Image 1 (tube, rainbow, N blue to C red):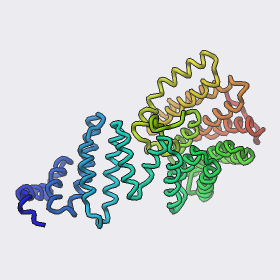
Image 2 (tube, helix red, strand yellow):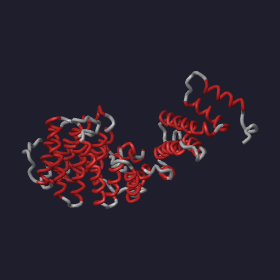
Image 3 (cartoon, rainbow, N blue to C red):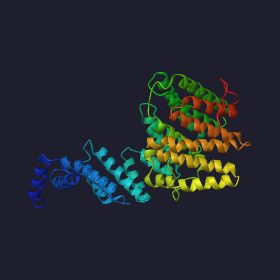
Length: 405
C-alpha cells in the first residue's frame, strides 16, 4: 500500500524520534506517537496503540470520576484492536483486554445493554466468564450456568474461581443436585490440598460448611451433618495447632458468605439486576456493586425498625443482608474488616437468640459468625459457635459444647 499521499512523513519522523528518546513518555505522548505510527506500521503499532489508549482511558476515568469518563478513548482502543490482523498471535488478548475495559466503563456509566453486547463480543473470542456474570446479574441463571460450566470443565484442575460461580448458577436455576455435585468436586480438591500441605485448612472448613448448606437445601440432612462434623474436627485441629498454611482467605470466605445470603434477596431480572452471587467480588459489574452497597443505610434502618416493632424474624433476615453488604464493602480493606464486621455478627447472634421458636435461625447466625471468626484467626471461638450450631441442627457434638453469649 502506498502511504505517500495520506501520511504526514514529518509527523512519522517526530513520532519515531519521540519513542527513541531517552525521556520516559507520558501515556498521552505514547498515544500521540502510536496514532501516527499505526498508520504506516499497523502490525507493529496497532497493539501498542490499543494498550496505550486503554491506559489513557483508565487515567481519565480515575481522575474525572464521572460516569462515562474515558469512554471515547476506550472506543478508539477497541477499534484499534479490531484492526489488528487476524493472523497476529496476540490479537485475541489485546482485543479482549480492550473490550474488558470498555464494557466496565459502560456498566459504570449505566449503559448496561451496550456493556452486555461488548461482553458477547469478548465471549466470541473464548472469554466467557464475564458474560456469564452479566447474565447472572440479570437473572438468566441457566445460560450463566452453561457458560460457567464450560469454563470449569475446560480447566486443568478444579479451582474455586471457576467452580463456585458454576455451582451458584446451577442452584439459582433450580438444578440443585447438579450444583451439589459441582461443589463437591471443589470440596474434595480442597481437602486433598489441605491434606498434602498445599492449602489452608480454613479453606476446607468454609467449603464443608457451604456444602452442608447446599445438602440441607436438597434434604440430604445426614450428609450435611457429616460435613458439619468434619468441619468441627478441622476447627479442633486449628484451635490446637494453628493454621499450617497461611493464606489471605477473606475473599474466599466473603464470596461464600455473600452467596449464602442470596436467599434473602429478591430475584434478579434485566430490569432489576443483582450481583452475580458466587462470582469473585471483583468480577461484579460496577452498577450492581454500587446498588448493592448503596442499600446499607436503608437496611440498617429497616433492621432497627423491625426489631423495635418486635418483628424479629424479618429483622434477622434484614440484618443478614446488611452484614453481607458490609462484608463486600470492607473485604479489601483490612483496617476496617474486623471493626466493622465483628459487631454485626455479634448483633446477628444476639437477635437470633431472641427467636426461641426458630432454632434454625440461631444455628444459621452462629454458623455465619463461626466462619467469620475463622477468617479472623480465632479458631477456638469459631469452633464453639459451630459446635452450638451443629447441636441445634444435628444433635450434640463431641467434644462438649461451651456456649458463648
